[in-house]
Image 1: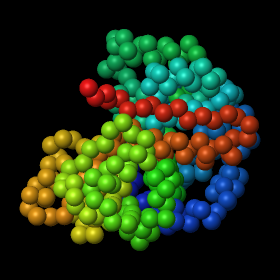
Image 2: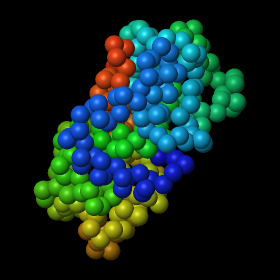
Image 3: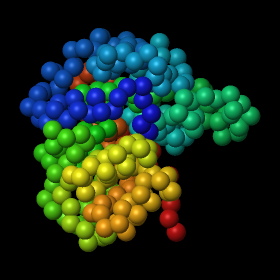
Length: 298
């Protein structure tokens, strides 16, 4: 999800330069020393925020469950703290789950409307009975330089060298067709499914990478750019960006859209968080537990 209190353009422009420079800097220079000696989950959270700063005062990145003053026994990083992810975390002995997206089915994790909901009660009691802390890491991970989600996506695809540092969220790659790019992304990210909109034989080189849920306005804004052939997105409303692309193709424009799924497009960024976090938390074990694609085809 990409609802945030700061300009995406500002941090993505800064992230592009920093991501280009990333291979040349060891982890120590990227912020290892900003972490204090950890004796509690809250200190780990504080260290992560300090490494991503500056502080955001209106943010969804808050504790959703548990007592963060306790010592940390292990950390699970995930796109979303599903009930299955929680169970696997308990099995591993982890008492901190760092989730990118909401735990309770809405952006701000408001629970008043779920008071009598049996699914909510089951999930809440599972966390409480096992003393698991859930902390959301969304705004700060996108605010980090470079953007943690985009970094994980690029690393998983092996596309770091193709990032254009002069243009926002832009990759310039060897020429392929729209369907070839879709197949490449499906294989590279290990997806069960991927969709495209447009002429499958359209040759393209310049992609806008928009993992997650940027929304119609940002997606179409990128596609309007003359230099962008294809927008690679996580999710769309099925009557918005995809219909704009269909109309653009009918009007004779060279445009394409690839839809990967919200969870699958941002999970690589939470896998990357494991590598980012391990050097900063000493001997505390850190795992990636993927939430997985919620959709099943027939």
